[in-house]
Length: 587
Image 1 (tube, one colour):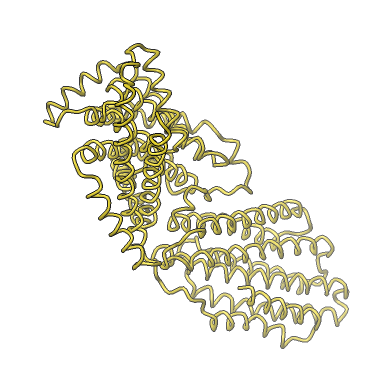
Image 2 (cartoon, rainbow, N blue to C red):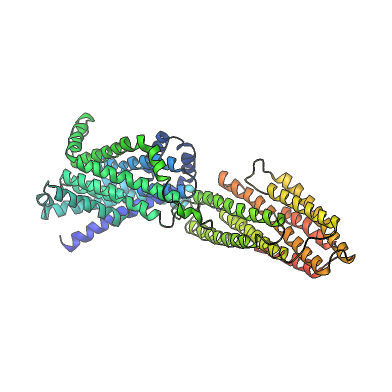
């Protein structure tokens, strides 16, 4: 093989992989909403999950991308393990679409006549659709054209290579020879990170006569086994559920590979009869496409009846990773490239962060003394870690272009995470103050503080955007009632200090504690309000999510006026005002 032929071959592979990448990335973004709908409605049962996996993979043209996404969906909590196994089975069947595309189009159509118009139309959509979904559809169409240009180059390269070196003469039919071709298929798939690309190369080599059908079938088996590397890479630093889904994918392909290799002569005999029965034009590429489909259907026949048992077995594995509450459970790097799904994952992780923040707030408001201060400090560290993880995930998701209809969702998510961060910060400060104060001896003051805590806890329950019946109107009424309670308790503390019913140091500490409680309520209200906006952005893309500045200022003013018109510690009031203004500027 001379240098020119080698470079031609490598260029063809490069075009092929570039086309696959453009097709996959473009279609993932263009079909973001559709993917969510398919996942939500099409995975309730194993048959529906299989059909969904077939459909998604056939459209996206990459089983590796779908497996990455499926593992990510499980990691993000969008799919259960049971649902994921159905999608994995379907995805493995759906990847045969590439084989049929090569077999039925690649050897029967003028590829340049098909490819160049596709590239032209795709680029037209990209240029005229900046920021819109049709731009990503244009990328996919361009990738489709480049895919066939690469295939055309590979056909020429394999044909020229076959004239100077007949590989078929060097391939025996022994087990060692077949195992060598299986290994070649595995290595090709791992190196190119795409079983579809490896299969297309195999079919092209067989179609041009470079390798016999038997060797091609062994390479198909190798490509199916090699694609499990995708799942193994996907579960690095993933959750336990994601690891279980990845193991299911590995088991499917390895078991099918072993069975197919053991029954290779029988399967090839069935392939020959199937081609006659389907009245397909005979040829090595067509035979391998049938063989590929047959092995995947065989895998479905083996694993479908065993789905429940497989789930039960896998559920007992990989439990230790879930013990770390500070580890993100829904932020998977493999779905960051699909903005719609990335925003879903952010919302689910923010739900976890909110639960931890509100839990700490409820505990510190109801506790007496400092028994829980160590746990509250740990909660703050956990929330800080999760906030950092959400920021990194959000930046990754916004690395490329994202549809304008959901672009505002990512800043909203970051705003919400900061509100929860502020809550745990003030929670820890309250715990420190509680460690230095004693229970007031005055019955009326003690009762007023207890009632204030009870009302604050009630507000925090109302401010949970995941509670059944959540609404902003009751929350707005509650925050105004809280402002009245806050004013009354603050005035009561000041009077108790003036009347020597409460030591001055105790009064100052209680006022500081009261100020931290007010800030917790303030941030909980804002977190609930902007969570509602975020979810509108997710479920109704394109919904206006401009920040309602007037409403925010008015709500903040309700709380600030209670300080401004109450005599007391002026330095504390000044700090309150500065912090409120600072937070609004940061927002």
